[in-house]
Length: 336
Image: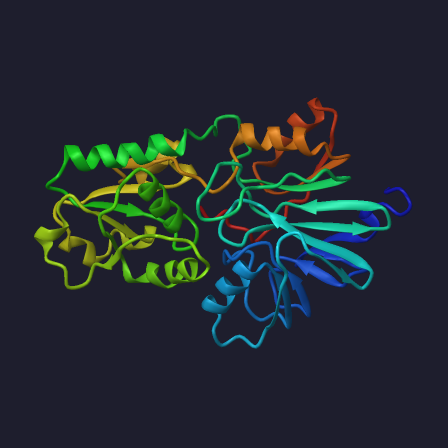
């Protein structure tokens, strides 16, 4: 049983996600609600149909792009600004996951709860870095919550791609990337490493790249794949959604070398089963060491784990002297 006035009394786990009862809002709800606070723009967190949405300006821009006909009333809340919802103070601070991603900081009756949403601790030119917040309860994801998941430096993975271009100049390099977040991050990493050539892209990727550019994120020259001669694509980088890599259009590429940018590429069997020649371990989620370091930095009284590999992180938290529990929320697909 929770202590009187503790967050368990006013922040509840429901089939529709986390619900703050005194503030009358859900966080990343699965189904339409009257008021939603959205951590970031991925489809498993930012669904259409809510009457009112509170989110960062970046997330609002993403949701407007993805749901153009939605009648939702959006309330952009810049990072660091506090807002009172029925007497509950809410603030959004950077989560470092993708453009606009935020942790939700909730203060009520002397208690602070921080809902991390999805987050990472690596530097990312496309979004502000994660800002740790000390709190009474830290609610974290655990997508890569197993000790086997230790992501290599991003620069090393991008160098693998650039070295492959030099080794196989006659082949197009077809890189699978999710349209939101991973696509733009891979582009930014390539630019940081000095790759200035136009990057060719599947048509499904342009819309969200435009959102990033409108939000002030430079991506350099991007070119649609349509109408480009096959010979012009030799030794070039072509980005496409993972599901599009095996479609008919890809047959136009000169002897494509398939790559995939994902934290899941750490699992060799997964890369092999997908026919990936060049796995690139580039993740937008915290790895095991970063999850543990974040708990140590935040120093919560309690740790709640929303989804992912929960058991190992719960055990680690107990070894650190932190009371922990699994919320086992469903409907969050760990988009990578």
